[in-house]
Image (cartoon, rainbow, N blue to C red; front, side):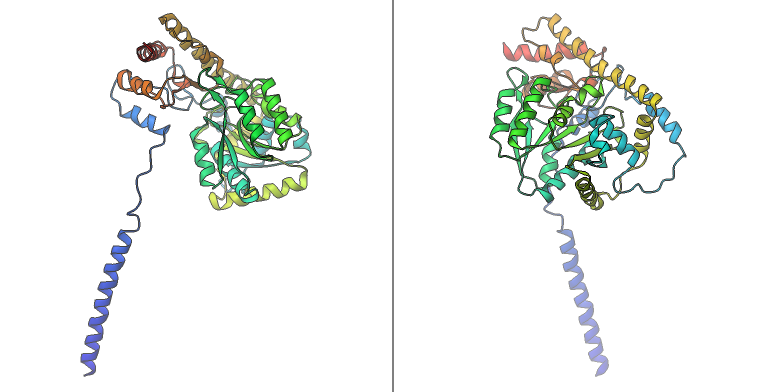
Length: 431
């Protein structure tokens, strides 16, 4: 009798295990059933399509990374020398949550000035970040946590990832006018109207120089007017500075917008990156800084920035920070970097002139003056999405559908081909 009960219980247990296992398998197999493929990134998808194209004539002017006149990636001599000096010289221990103190110190000098009173008075809360993207994201989370009632005003257009960053940080977004499609320049009056109409104490995202994707920057006088209106309205300016030195070849000139706001007494935030101006794309080296009222406030803000970084990635990487601090901390290497970054900027400026000259020599009836008026890595060409599609389909030229041309992808070898293609798609469509 007891044996029969035991057998029934064993059978029942085995049956329950089979049922439970079946339910568990069905449950586990359905966990991710609702996940759909994410849309392709509009920028990274261009490179994927380019690589898949077998045409020998293909040209990639979508990539946002510097290339030499042979279309090859570049490692700066100052970077190679810094790597030689640091090889084997440091332990691979964790950096503090705030990153390399030396790298942050040198980075702040670039943005705020070598002799900045704010650095001396310790009024700046700053941490090393995962390049400019990481700096923007930490600030977005900081804004959400400590100014949850605020929105972020983002220019139209802007780098597409700006929208992703503040969206994922759950900060409500508004936009403000920036680019004027007809003039292919700055829509200054509409920009000022939007700044004026925004609620007092709003947060605005500003591109410090070499606006991405348009290459259109305010003049110095316009920056002064923007700064004065920000003072009247009590707005907070957060500068994304991804191209200091790379835009004009002069880091001081490229930081002029920030210096104007500092002169006018603003408390500001800055995202800095060494991806473009040192070619450290894969090292992900950057800095987030927030100017505060006084030292005690800066200490508190820095502690909170570090707390936000802790659950994201805990500590920033070491190698890239050592490269930057070695270059900027050594007068000889810094001088070499300034020479090399000017060389990169000058090549970009030169290719702008050549592209415009080629279009004008062909006899294009359109004005291409905006190509040389804009600055930085990107040229907002004015091509429509349909014209861009033709560029790709008929000429194997790849760029984002908003017509943004990466001037780093333009070389003396392909500039004529690019100009001919642009002429063909614009004259056909306009005739």
